[in-house]
Length: 405
Ligand code: ASP
Ligand code: MG
Image 1 (cartoon, rainbow, N blue to C red):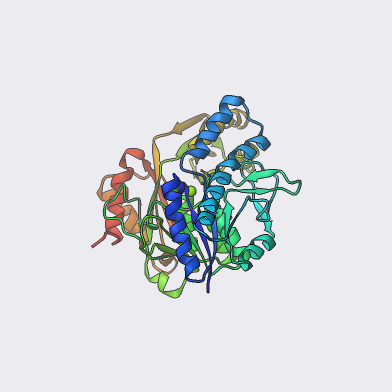
Image 2 (image 1 turned 90 degrees about the vertical axis):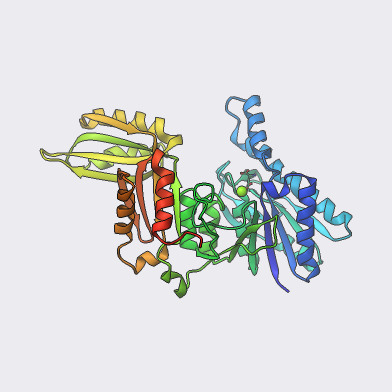
């Protein structure tokens, strides 16, 4: 007997037929004698619709009430699945986030889970019930409903899996696993059987949308085995697990392309101690996440400082930079929006040399100019013009031997 957490995303619960399919799959596990905990997203598109409604009701919807509203999407699907299971003659019980004991901090709209008191869920399971939990939500210590950020049901599922010490956390979605790159860009992309938390985290941060970033952080921290798979087939998907020795033999496991960044350059910044602090402190105060930073020293005591931010933060970051440029005596602020960050990711980079050289040579052979470069232990990223992004991804996919045979 295993304890399994199954999370179903919005497209897997899009209508009653879909929810009936979910019930089939859950019952299959239950009939095998496994203890089943199901975590659900809202029906596809519902969270967006609720956001639109909130925008119609108020120019600046109150954050606490917005969370109360958004949480109803998941409340709906949890209730519907439980009804269907009960109609079929099984014991099932729905739980809203707070009923499942999920306690979070107070940050409305992006709350973090502080702890989970699983007593109620355990009791339901011990009574032979299937526990059906509304994802994406919890409550703070005053009892106010909070939500965990877009895509947050993944994090609910992984957190519950960790709290219950489940054998596996299965994430059912509309793709059949994690791919070496986006199959819509590169038809030679192939499904990865097993990937490490670290690599998955880099891929999620770089825009692979299969899992919410925070859910991968959580899985890594608490060592939760995650199985990403399709709710429309029986096929095995991708296992996201701790790194093992065989993984390092694969030098590059995936290639990502992020079109969501913009570049800002402060030109001819006086080369003095403290200028970087003056540039980046006000950005931090405005809660703007800076990604890549590059500084090149010119002659004559001046430097150029270039950095990237997400498109959402671009206007704000540009305003702040123009203000700071005046204060510190920088000559000019330049910006570029049509850029893409193409990255190669692989645990094997830790022990293999030449990955960067291969990447640069491949881009050069396509005549693609590199604007910025950054690296981590297991990733190399290059910023290029967005119009070359797809070409770059396909060429790199081939160059690193990832093409499907
Ligand atoms: N319903 C929420 C969203 O659309 C949470 C989730 O689906 O994971 O972001
Ligand atoms: Mg999702």
